[in-house]
Image (cartoon, rainbow, N blue to C red; front, side):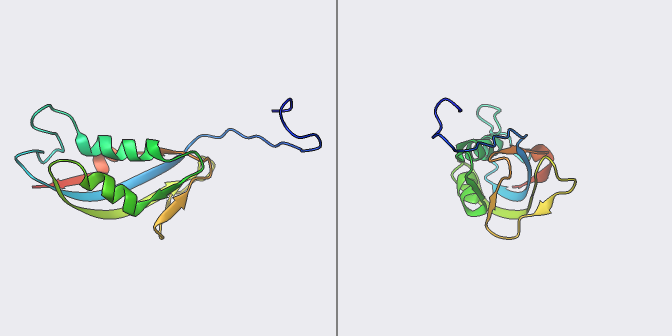
Length: 126
């Protein structure tokens, strides 16, 4: 960076671990497509988990987590009939506790996100 920065500019570059994010949701699914464990009947995959991971991966570095866009990503999954988003919480790597995301958006301190315990925080209703 020193070789390409403008002369006189002082840089402070940090690399910190991604912010942890927890997502709780109840997902109503078509039992002919996805079972009560979230598994697609035709191929054994977990399409809701994949959709959530793809949404988070698609957030540009420094971008915002948006609850509405998360729900939209889940609803695009074949076999999902409805989504009730529960509590979403996040914490920076330096924090000791998760903070509930009260508004619709959350900007990560680290600029990116990592999911925590998603397998146990999603409830499927058939």
